[in-house]
Every structure is written in C-alpha cells, then in structure tokens.
Image (cartoon, rainbow, N blue to C red):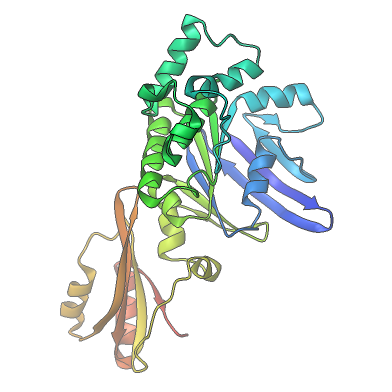
Length: 322
C-alpha cells in the first residue's frame, strides 16, 4: 500500500504540492491526471524518493520515504520500477544490456544462466524476444518503451511508476502499451501508478484516478465517475462543451453508469406520457465497459415530473444552464 498524507512541496517560493492525500491499494492501477504544471510528475518523484518533500508523509508498504536515510531509501527504490516518456535507453547498449542495466547497478551478474533466463522471459512478456541484440536506434518508439518496461521489471519490483509513458506514442501504439501494462498488472500483480494528461490512458486501464490542479487533489474516484459526471474543473480540463442548447424548455443531462440497466428514456416517455427532444449524447469506453450521457429537452411544465422519475430510477442528472 502507498499512503500519501498531506504531502507538500515547494520550489523556492512556488508551492507545487499543497497537502496531497492519496491512498493506493496493492495490485491497483491508479491514475494521476491533470494539465501540465499540476504537480503530477513532482508527486511521482516524491513517491520514489527522487525528489524530497517539505511536509506531510509518504509511506510505501509501511516504510516512510525519506532522503534522510539513503540506505533505506535505496531499498525502497529497488521495489519501485519506473518508466518515462523519453525511454532513457543507452544507445551504446543492445536490448539485452539495456534491460540488464539495473542489475549491474546492484552489483548483480548479468550473464549467468539465471540472469539470461530472467531477461529472456521479460523480453517475451513485452513481445521483443526477437530484438534481444538490437540497438535502440533500430527500434520504433513503441518497441523502445517495451524495452524500458522490461528494464523496470528486471529487479522484480512490487510497484511500477509510469511518468507520461505514452505521451510520445501514437494512439495505436499507446493502446498496445496500455494493454501490456494491464497484462503486467494481471499476471504479476504489480501495483501501477500512471501519471498522464491523456484521458484515454486512465479510461482504458485505471481502476481509480485522482485529478490534480495547481498541486491540489480536486476529485478522486473511478474514472467513469470523474469523466461521465465531471465537476466543473474536470469539465474544463476535458474541454467539454454541450454545444448549442435549445433556448426554450429545460435542458437536462442524464448520466448512465453500470447501474443503468433499464431503457429509462423510452420508459419515461410512456409512463409520463410526455414528448421530448434528444439534443446530444456520447458514449465512453472504460475498461471495456461502456458508459455515457444524454441531453434531453423537455417542456417547463414537465420538469418536476421528469426529475422525480429520474430520481426513482436512480439516474444521475443535471439541469443545464442553471
């Protein structure tokens, strides 16, 4: 378990983290999302001890992360693999030696039968066993990131930290890398923390997500809860617009989640005997589950009955323009 309690961080007079409190469960894929400058990467670097923090506490598996005890910090860092946006591969080394690099840093032999078996198995896991002797210059961006993932796993960490790991990749390759991360989580049980500004990333693999703005957690929960029925700050981050809404009548946005099983719209029309217009709608894919929202326009006289009906059916709603 990773516990952040009221974590604060300054760079000079600039307060980057303003009392961040988050708890990340074992074996979870957890997303931290927000715009550039929100404090996401700084928070991640504080978690693995690459950056110090000025107040609060960070605990990983019950141990406090602190630069005041370098020996203990180094052992904690051994349990936390990390992958970056720019891959950080050494061009003078082939794929095998790039993956083996953390073993060298820890004084381990990298050419023993055991080491070779481990590295071969990791390259098989990431789908690059045929590239074992290739140089980074011979690889695509997606292949480089797969090498970086194998390298991050070579010390058998319990936690994998991903700092904008897909930002430099095109959408198709991004989906492949996210599928690989999901596979690693499923098969190895590794806790994964994903820092990103890409909504598609957290939608596809994250079980829970925090939204950061100006060093503060403004919202936390399942991705579908944040993005289907967003607070105004998340809505602004998504640059979500309702488009042109009818000026007459009442515009109501309905939010459909995994609890929405019935054909509410057609049932409502029949049971209340009312007419309405569908203004717009959208569907979102969250970890292979489809959720969505719909905006309808009704007469003013029908508002009370419609909202009462939606409440009885446990459908979340918002009257737009109020």
